[in-house]
Amino acid sequence: MVTSLFFYLFSFIITACAVMVISSRNPVHSVLFLILAFFNSGALFVILGAEFLAMMLVIVYVGAVAVLFLFVVMMLNINFSKIKEGFQKYFPIGSLIGFILFIEIILMVFSGDLLVNKNNELNDNIPNTHKIGSLLYTEYIYVFQLSGLILLVAMVGAIVLTLRDRPGIKKQDIISQNTRQVSDVISIVKKESS
Image (cartoon, rainbow, N blue to C red; front, side):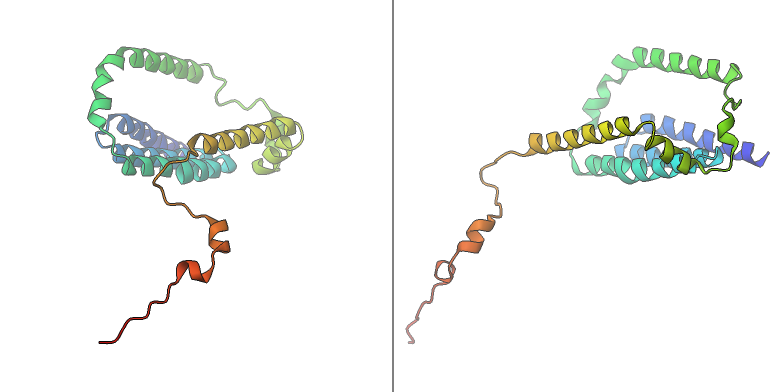
């Protein structure tokens, strides 16, 4: 009974935060509501017994993505009134996609398979973090390594795309710093006394 109460409480908070993310006028408030939704989603994962997923959600999304959004929103001077002008233009297609997702959720809830655990291996006493690790590093090791390689290529590509030589920007030239002589930087001037 208490678990169901907390489940509905966290679900209501997530739904309210999702509505506030898309309807808030201030983008900083939208990001803060998004962070609150992530924390409550992590609480739902803890209730479902998936503590590893809960901690990964909090660490990755709150610790990295949401903070990145917050810094980007706060540091860039974006004219959000121009961005929100096209809201009415995209409202019909957004409503259609939202209606389709709502119908899918209703069909999933009333199908009856949502609360039934058909996998008997999940009932043993091994923690789910151990299960995820053993499955990830045995059966899916090649896919795991491939995803790491894709992330590495994406990181190198982002660095190469943003690295450009701009004139007028002061940069540190280590070779010229190490090879300079004292006479190049210091000059002794004798001033006549009056």
